[in-house]
Amino acid sequence: MKIIFATGNKNKMTEIRQILRDLGMEILSMKEAGVDIDIVEDGKSFEENAMIKASAIAELPEVRAMDAIVLADDSGLEIDYLNKEPGIYSARYMGEETSYHIKNANLIERLTGVPDGKRTARFVCCVAAAFPDRKTEVVRGTIEGRIGYKEEGENGFGYDPIFYVPEYGCTTASMSSETKNAISHRGKALQLIKPVIGAYLDTKGI
Image (cartoon, rainbow, N blue to C red):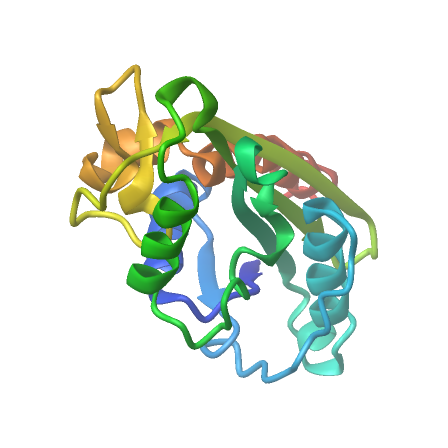
């Protein structure tokens, strides 16, 4: 049985494969699975958007023919001082084609003069699973931190260079892949979805 993960982001697929490798299943991106669909993410929460994506892909005839498990995530950055912006609009913040270097610079500028104690933020990731029997489930993982004063680190992507984790004394972009995957919002959510997938496989005798 295969897993189709609803993303075309190569960096995200690398993380996902590392975290889920002990499932021993082939994990395909949408492109690798031959899925080409535009999905309107009009949910009001990370959970709703993840479920919208997973369910839409799972109902495609070509996916149902594959008897695959579909996973989809919706993730983003919540900055408390900015009323939890950019939140569910993290990927679309300032436009999807805008580089994260520009997005990060804008967020830092908006926090000019704001002290450490009020720069609190978190990454949120919700992972939804849609199974061939049409059952669905969604889980949430988070990591708490604060927004730094400049971009630091080369190992992450997106907002990682400005997300500082005090316990580790660095941004998530400065962490090794192993450390980041162990503590990140996506890592936690994927760890939570593993037993859900395992329970489904057990019911099928796989």
